[in-house]
Image (cartoon, rainbow over all chains, first blue to last red; front, side, top):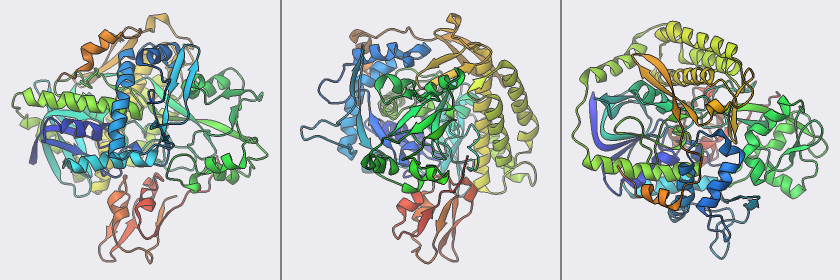
Length: 564
Length: 66
């Protein structure tokens, strides 16, 4: 096996991975990025045709300060999970303006930059004690800005290269084995530090009827590769029981921009206000559970001008083909005269490797950032990508020389080769469809212990009986086969954690809901479930989450400087 | 439900083949044209359509009711 020697290895060239690479290159030139797709098409931001928001801080006059923002966050529905770190929110509030200024220098464009130099023209709310502001950016300009800067800095990117498994030596992560998904070539990457930035878990649930299995809301390449690798390498993963949902109109995985969302009584249950925005994801579940379904998207009072904006979605790149309006027309409805019923869909799972304020995980030499971890937003990816890039690069500069475990390298190679040697068996898509169907039926929004146990039993059967028969006819299927291992790992972690958390906990955009334990239990407040692989088995532990209080300026100053 | 490529309009620049994130497009060396080999894996991201300099790629969204 050919080995590439580097200081820092970054897996995933999306928002967080690119930002980490750029920052790391201020300290070391030996940075290598791996991307399963390409630099142009890797990560959620590469799709581009969506509206994006710089938040919670902007340069608008009257914007809240970090303390006010975290206060607001803790008193909003998002703060109610009691499992997140308020310091992470403080860090983002403190540092997002600097990251955005960098991005703007590299080419990011705002939707409505004002003559006085401020970035936005809306979103500057104060409701009760809560404040937030946001500046809308042109979604299609973010990824090109990052790519441009990566190229200017001459950073090395291995495109179409999927990381298969992490290499470890004495508990330290020392690189990875990568597969070129076009040529089938297998490379070793030897690195002093590794950053996981493989994004969200998109392919967990079944698609809506009539869609193919790759058309989910987030990028279809996101299969929890980093989570699977981290688990197998022995890292601690946390909060895997929480999931995300969204509501959809017609066959469009769209936000319900424009118009209003009403329940069966015609009451508006969702407004694009600060307060409601955070509970957007759970609001419709409440209507269902409390007997106020069905829910509708009502755009009868929308002006023709606004209707045009909705038709073309928001943001810069516009595809009328996938507009809300067309989809509604397909159902024979006239949105000018009628309401359209909306539906809930699962988006994916939250949770991932445990991380500190510099993206450091429980394993030495391993960092995780962006949607890979419990973060789930573009601005988090910028801020923590930057911090982890610096922390990992500084770690490389002082790290000892590393040793490889030859046996481990051989074993990973053999895992890959075995799949192509087999001439018959089960295809990756057969297994993927089974896993995602099990997740949809037994581990969806509203869970019960019995159904979760049954789902787990089915997943374990797949693991024991079908996985050993997995085979790949060509390199393309080999990539899918490697992905399905990770999808299975993520699904199993989700079900096991959801079984253990015998309560319901809802906070803003993420939730864990058990029909058999419908209320939050104070026993579980600030309790995180941690998963680790021990002797080939998943072990679950309870850990205490950080104190849910607003950090002081002094608290922040102690961690502001990024340490390796 | 996938990308459709007009072989006559296509100029063989490979942009769609190079950029498809899910790698569903392969390259036919003989014809010097792209081939949508895994249409079931298209996620309708429109990157191929957007990258095509001669407007030869059209991503078509299925007519579906739910």
